[in-house]
Structure formats: structure tokens, C-alpha cells
Image (cartoon, rainbow, N blue to C red; front, side):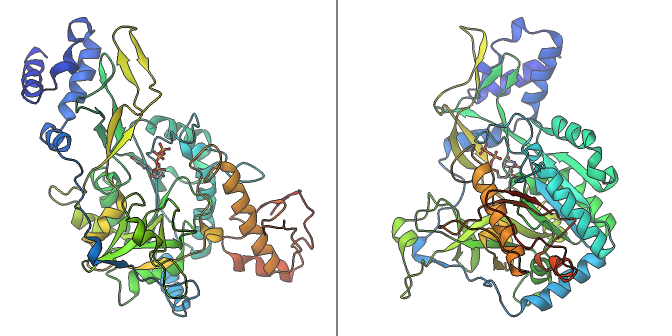
Length: 471
Ligand code: UTP
């Protein structure tokens, strides 16, 4: 161990980071081993590069930036692409993939975010919502849809325990594969590694972009290839309305003549110029996502002659990605650019011998973003969807994108589905449904699945204001 220590100390010294060894003398053997293991994992050359640069992502030339083109809701070609997607599902070529490695600090839930009780009446956890959708798709198409879930070293154990405690939601654990993503060290605002305890560095998951490398490194890509999986339905853990399996989107992505079949995305129209979502743009022949903080105000506010926002294609982090694309990208020393974010990172304080939770951002975290892979495709497609149908994220504990806004959107979607089949649904003056309505994927995976229930008169005729309804 002494030899390893010496060699790491010298490497750290050379890059001005050996302060992380300052408690070495007082550490127990086990603690020393743990710290050395963390330090050995560090890519010091990368760290030096990241601490000396402002941002790795190439700057966007906004003079050459146009709004991205997209297939709008109701595009007449969608039914034929739906048939193609259903064919892929019947042939067992599709996997579901949830990225669930984030820290979920804004929501402040004590467990992994996927364990958060998300549905509006029965409070089903997010992972159960997705599991039920996958089960319904498996039943419909007669094939297993393997489910891959990316965790992070911070929540992997807890996430596995949650699946175990819930009997894997009735799924075979062989078809439900969890794997952790990589981490990056957080640094102080002046570029120094941070200790969260005397024997451990402050590490953060390396962003949802880390999923590409993690899919390859964990063996998930090989597993997919062995199963004959060709396309991955990618979604985030925080959106209970996501269509985990969307045949029309998958078919469009995999078979449209203007798609390379490598990576496609869904979008919603921005509510207004100031909305804080990334925007799909067309830049140098490629589709890119520009973060809201980077989009110049003049472009964010630019309108067409009909008064519609020009840069309106908001990102909802739903993608279809081919296994071949992940495989191609992750050969060799592939890396997406790291983005820097100022965050609050707990640190060890020698004076009090305790870990301190800072009240202000004190550190920089490095993360990669999945949408930065879009420029690496030959061609990439965008499909519009409506918020009420598919986007009710739970990110904050209150206000926008919170459990309560998500509940309202869930009821709005379910209410609209029922109205289409003749149920009277109470609505408030602002159009919101005035009741809590939950529809399980076992009852209706898609809206049309309510049709036979309506024909058999099994749908409620009327929902009472401020009541709960579960179908
Ligand atoms: P967010 O950007 O909402 O981040 O992640 P977060 O870490 O979950 O939450 P905050 O910012 O700390 O409040 C969007 C999606 O990407 C996943 C998250 O789990 C979520 O599904 N993600 C994010 C990862 O899988 N890994 C990461 O390193 C970051």
C-alpha cells in the first residue's frame, strides 16, 4: 500500500491536488484503502483540463442557428410508422431504458427518485408506473421488453433494494437490469478536489450523458446485442406520463427515410419565450439542443409572422437510440463534453470534524448531457408531442414541475381520455380537471384502449368535482 500511496501522492502533487491526503496519518487501514481506490480511479489529465477551461462544449455560432424542423402532432405519416414500430416490438427488438442516477436534490426525497409516490390517487412509485407500462406492452406484443435502469454509486444499493422489496414489480430480474453510472469529482470554485470526509472525495454522477459509456461498460450493450435488441427507448425517471413504449415514435425513428435510425427525440412547444427548457435547433447541418441559459434573448423571443415563437421546440429528454449507435460511439476513447454547474456540495470541515452542508453554491460539478450525442448522428429526427399527453415531470418539491403540478397534468390527461369516450369530467375555469383521476397502464396503455371499455359501458358516465377516480 505504501508504494501505491507514494505514487499517487506524487501524481497529485504534480497537479496541485495532494491536499486530499492531508488526513492520511490518522486514517485506519480500511479508510486508507477506500481513499486510494477513489484516487486511483481519477483521470488527473482530464481534471487538469477541466479545471483550466471554462466549458468543454464548443460554442454555438448563433448566426448559423435555425429552428429545428419537426414532425408535428397529427402528422399523417404517423399511423404507418406506428405499424413499423409495432412490428419491431413483436419481433422483440426494443428495450426500455431509464436513467435514474441523478441526485434529485431539488425534490429532496430521501430515497431514489424512482421510489417517489408519483400517481395522483394511489401514489404508485415512478418505477411501478414504468413497470406496469412495460408489462402492458409485453402482453400486447407477446415479447419481453428488457428494462435497463442506470443508477449511480450513490443510489445503486437503495434502488436494488427497492426493486427487491417490491418483488421486481412482478418482472423477471433477468429482464430487469440495473447498473451504476460513472462519477466525477466535484471541485471548489478555485479548482481544488473536495473531501466529503477524511477518507472520501466528493463525487457526483457524471450526468445523463454518462449513460452511453455506462451502457457499454456495464455489459448492457452486449446483453442487448445477444437478445437481438436494436432500439432503446430512453427516458428519465422523473416523468410519470412518459410513454415508455411508443410504437409510432420508435417506428418513425427506425424507418423514416430522413432518419439515420441512430438517435431521435421528442419535443413539446415552449409555453413562452422565458420558459426554462433546452431548445432543439438546427446548426451546421445537425440537430442540437441549446440550453435555455445559452440561447440569446433575441432568438428566444423571435417570432414568425403569425406570432409563434421561432425557437419553440422544447426538449423533454425522451429519445429513441439505436444499440448500433451506442456501440459505435463507445468504441475507443469516446467522451461527450463536460458542462460545469455551480452547486452546493457537502464538504469536510477540519475545525468541527464534521461534514458541512453549505447554504450557497460552493463547488463545480461536471456533467455530460445525453443530447450532446445528437451532433454525432448522421441525421436525427424530432417528433412533437403534447405536454398534457406525455410530460409531467417531478423535479421540485413545490411550484413548477412538482408533485402537485404533475398530479394536475396526470388528471388533465386522464380526464381528456375519458371525455373522448363520453364521460362527463368536471373542469375549472382555467380548463384544469377538477378531480383526481388515475388510469393504470393495465387498464389502458394508450388512449384507444378505452374504446372497448366504452363499448361495454364500463367507463364512468360522470366524475364528481373534487373526487378520486381510479381505473
Ligand atoms: P436532472 O437534471 O433533473 O437532475 O436529471 P437530478 O440529479 O435528477 O436532480 P437535481 O438536479 O439534483 O434536483 C434528469 C434525469 O437524468 C438522470 C436523473 O436521474 C433524471 O432521470 N440523471 C441525471 C442521471 O441518470 N445521472 C446523472 O448524473 C444526472
